[in-house]
Length: 267
Image (spheres, helix red, strand yellow):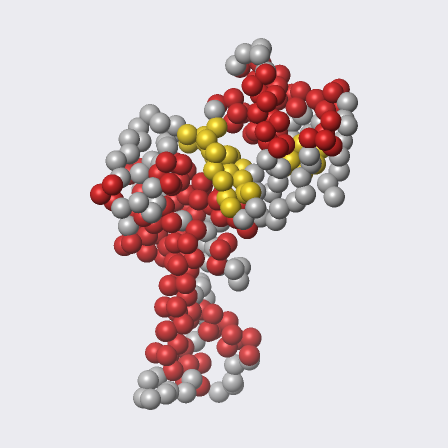
């Protein structure tokens, strides 16, 4: 019998640890040495179980609130189903949950808990913000050198950690309760929409509630619209007085969230 190549054995072992559609014949396992009367295949199963456990632990670290809400048993089922559809292709377990918000939204669980997909999205954005590389910010002094005409036409580039999530549910409040004892939780969730900006300051991820106009302004800027275009939309939808918007935009600069404009190239 022809001995399998190294590549064939590696593929077979991968299929044993994380099953795929096709695998090489089990006869390859005869070359695995038994130890202490334990067959080689039985010893190999330890690695398969370890993969599932570490995958679930990786998801649990990122999706702490989702884990808390649905409980250990259902989270284990969720992790197993998710791993089958989105197997890890990254050596860093912090990134295995990239597709979980979309995945969980397709499950019956999303009908039972309609806020769960938005909660998962918030937790993923928090994780992304934590791992994002912070860039040197553009200060108010640098912006003051740009003429008002050019500034209104400028497109702003934000820190990689900046993102927003808009939900019909109080996802930030739910997330903030993830470590609180169940007997102390009394949260009304119906009719309490929340819009949240996620960003990192130093080594700490911040989550800030936004008003509707703040959300629209930030979303427009993140999409690459000019300040003039964004303010025009705000004026049409909310009011002609853009003084609050101007002040709030200044606060984004003061918080170091803008790294460049179309008038100032990033370093």
